[in-house]
Image (tube, rainbow, N blue to C red; front, side, top):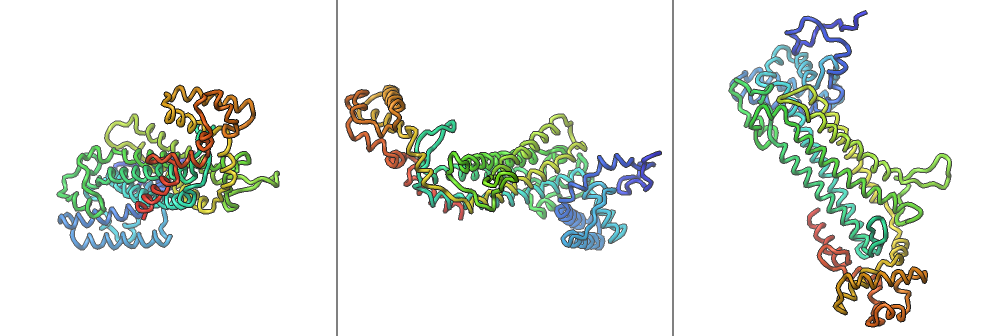
Length: 466
């Protein structure tokens, strides 16, 4: 039994064909289940295009108005959830055009003068990505504001700083949180730069060679909010650098969220107990009644894999494509839409979760008071006061740490006689140097962890994020 379709070939492009497509060809060829999300951009682009055709006297005012009125009817149906997408018409462009035929009749056929689906789809897609970038930049800014409140409230909250996840030096919690604000700011800039780079309009490039009609590409470019038309029609229809830019910026931003999510998981664990994630963003166990799991943070940590996976999928699609357009490029939209959905959700969850977080300052302070955390301060003291090289000071302090380990105490608990055995120049002023507060306050270099520096950075960020 044949599984060929009984209906006619696609009337939008089927004049050259004498038999219908196979059902399975429809399954692999149709993209409407994905690209329907660009319907409003498609309508907006078509309205600008038809206005240009009228302006250039390529079509009459009557036909132009008829098409625009029909497109507005379709837009209203979309906004009211009444527009029906049909896989038989493959993609969003053909679905809109077929509906336009149903509404206004043969005048709809004038809409596709001087354009191809090749330039149409990349124009729609650039507009969608541009809109989505604006949304993501806004969500990143909201996270920055939330993090800034936490940093401001904890400008002098002591905590251990880590390298290799080993206790390193005392820092302030506010300083640690400000590190992520710096990351988020770079994320915003990457997205803004991606938006600026993509903002050239491909419409009018047609299939790949431009068009013989006397169109005005600067007209449509301005109407659609682009900076200028693209300068090469072949590059215009085949370019997906803007997709790589978007996915790259998304991957880096998601990685930053994942890194912080990992810290939240660690900090919320029983061994650290630095923070408590609210009930709203925690789950329990089906078998262990006592459990409190940081699932929201864990899921943020996991979702980055979907986004970085999309980036490398796009690299793989592009790496073997000759110019100009190939149907392989149809796969780009699913990767971008999925990445946007994931990143948008990650940002929303992180922002709300952080607004409800509880910081256990006592536990932070307790862990800051151990593990020889001011050893570097002692080494710096010897350099400053006795003109030792840092390497000599490093050796002396290393031996003092070894001694304290044997005595099962911290450096500040060693007797002065023990210090003098290592270096007779040391006096009892050493105990002030070993103070955690002193250690943090002394880190007053620009960008350092001292409360005074944290307050300065907070003040700067408040001005930037107004």
